[in-house]
View (cartoon, rainbow, N blue to C red):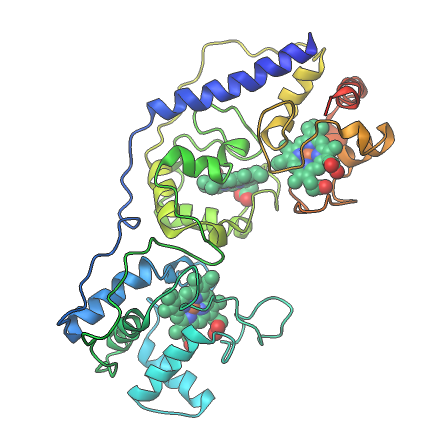
Length: 371
Ligand code: HEC
Ligand code: HEC
Ligand code: HEC
């Protein structure tokens, strides 16, 4: 019976995704469109404008170089002053030196690391910035020159980079990509939300997940910039009543810029949820499916087919741990982190929130869960 309820729950979840997929407006992302620019006969004004497109598009520079504090806010700062300061520190002057400085910043980010922005624990000797001429960003020489021309122009300098010639590789049409990303970006909002498991934790008008705040009507609370901050740097401000450290803080690294924009556009248009007329069922939970439902385990773990993969599969768990160890990993999930998964991801309050009876139901069920 319990088994059937759980299957039912998983099926309901799958149906929800299927129905959800049909009720959404199709949002067209503009950044995932290939950048089609012929470099043949491009003049400096064209190079500057290409560089600007690359900076927020294929180069994914704005994924980090924005106002969120992950990297210097290049587009907002006075670049003339910044470059003068940087050149003094590295011993050089003039626009040609600026060209070299920017090129080296892109090709060997760790050569000069801006103070305070190095990788944690490296004392500013290692830059978190990806090399831009390697996969997956792969800017070619003309594209790098275009970005340099754009930044020099912003600093009020005459760009010093050469114009492209017929021998240069044409600007390719590769999709937008960021650090460590090899696969193409999702262009479908459902696939994008699914890829980053937003609905496992947030109610986006239907999933009922409540590990994070419901996002329906979020545009009344947050504008575009605040949303971007909440997604890229979730721990900078914690929504009241929710746990710090639960929302993944790696989304900025894992997302394509176009996916981020797609998700933000979708959230800004998500209406205030319609409150359901159904009375809440507040009776005591009497079976394992109810416990799993109440505490959202299937949002992160694959339990007989939910396909969630934020946490390890729990099928056949009794072959890996005994009842005591199982209980311990539910009550104190960070005491031991399952290999290949992240710490601080699984909520650590189940021990406090669950009654004895609920814990017993859950353990009985999990210990019998077949492989
Ligand atoms: C994953 C995040 C990330 C991405 C993507 C990224 N950068 Fe950076 N970048 C950084 C960080 C962090 C620093 C500061 C540390 C350092 O000096 O390397 C930096 C430094 C720089 C600097 C030196 C800035 C200064 O104030 O002296 C330049 C120039 C630069 N980046 C250009 C770019 C360009 C152009 C792109 C896109 C083609 C890009 N970056 C993409 C993170 C990133
Ligand atoms: C593992 C659970 C989890 C996942 C996955 C997750 N979030 Fe969150 N999110 C949270 C929690 C918990 C909070 C509240 C704490 C905080 O502010 O960091 C939160 C906060 C937020 C907020 C701020 C809401 C407010 O009212 O302040 C936004 C916006 C948001 N998340 C969007 C997203 C999006 C978009 C995704 C998918 C790309 C996502 N989250 C994925 C758990 C998650
Ligand atoms: C927000 C996502 C999330 C939720 C909700 C969640 N877990 Fe987890 N769980 C994880 C992650 C991630 C790990 C692996 C990291 C670790 O060991 O803490 C994990 C680990 C476990 C483990 C250890 C598995 C092993 O193979 O070592 C068990 C058992 C477990 N969870 C059970 C549960 C149960 C039961 C629930 C519901 C009461 C639950 N989890 C809810 C994310 C979650």
